[in-house]
Image (cartoon, rainbow, N blue to C red; front, side, top):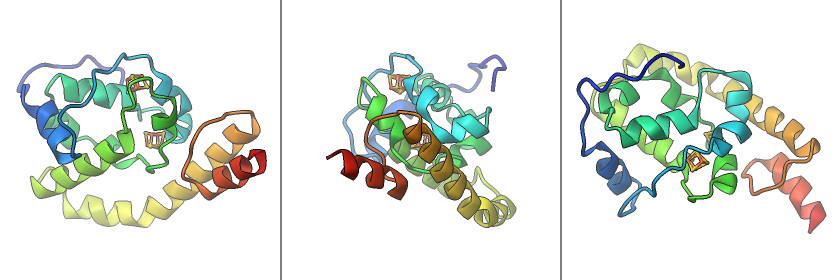
Length: 156
Ligand code: SF4
Ligand code: SF4
């Protein structure tokens, strides 16, 4: 996803719409610090996946580009990025809503969903294993994966 971002068809209300969907008055401005992308276990193995970039595209109102992108389906909802985000942006919630909007508004084809359903379990397993390694390498923070809870409970 290193290609230039095009502002064609930008929808200035998109960020507010996403905020409303996730039950917030607003999504706090992103500092583009990249902490989310740095910690993300999916990003470690799928280099096209970049939560910071997706947040940036939402802020720019690039609804069509975001909702038609395969990458919004790669988030495994582990919340690792939330634990390091200085703005408390909960990307997993946003990704869930983006997926729902993509389905409702016809941005995603049934064939894709069927194919995705077949790899979803693998993606979650990959996410858990990658995060497990990060934890063993010294990463600290909240995390929903069972491997994380096991380690943090030991630390009290
Ligand atoms: S960690 Fe938060 S503030 Fe930093 S780039 Fe990611 S979403 Fe933006
Ligand atoms: S919730 Fe997990 S998989 Fe999704 S963007 Fe954040 S760190 Fe990556």
